Length: 189
Image (cartoon, rainbow, N blue to C red):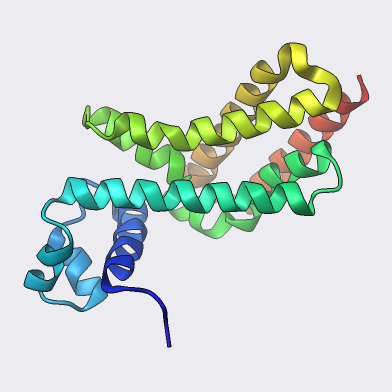
C-alpha cells in the first residue's frame, strides 16, 4: 500500500502535467482527472493553481536535492559527480526530446507569464549552480568555479532545447561526450 496522501498524488500529477502540457495549459480539471478525485476533494487540498505550483516547485527542489546528495555519495570524486549531471541528459532523453528540460521549460514559462513564483522556480537552477560550483572548486578551480558552473548549466540547457527541437538521440549523446571531454580538460589543468 502506498504511503502517499491524496495531496501527494495531486502534486505528482500536477508536476507531470505542468511538464508535459505547461503550467498555463493545465487546468484544475486536468489534474483532478489525472488523480481521479472530485473537484471538491481537490479544493480541500488546494484552493488555487498557484498553491499547486508552489507545492510542485517545493517537490522538485526536494527531489533535486536528493539527487544531488545521491550523486555526491555515489561519485568517487568531483569530476565523476559532474559527469552524473551531464549524463542526466542521456538518462532522461526520451522526455527531453518530447518536452524539453523540466527545469528550463518551467522557468521559461513562468518568466513569460511574469508569474509571482518565477523566483521560486529559479531556485532549481540555483541549486544546480551552487552544487556544480562546489564540484568545480573541489577540482581546484575555485577561482572560476561559478563561471564553469554557469557554462555547464547553459550548455546543458542548450542541448535540452535543441534535443527537443530536433528529437535527435545522437546529438544528445555527442554533446554529453563533448561536455565530458571538456570536463576532463578542466580537471587536468
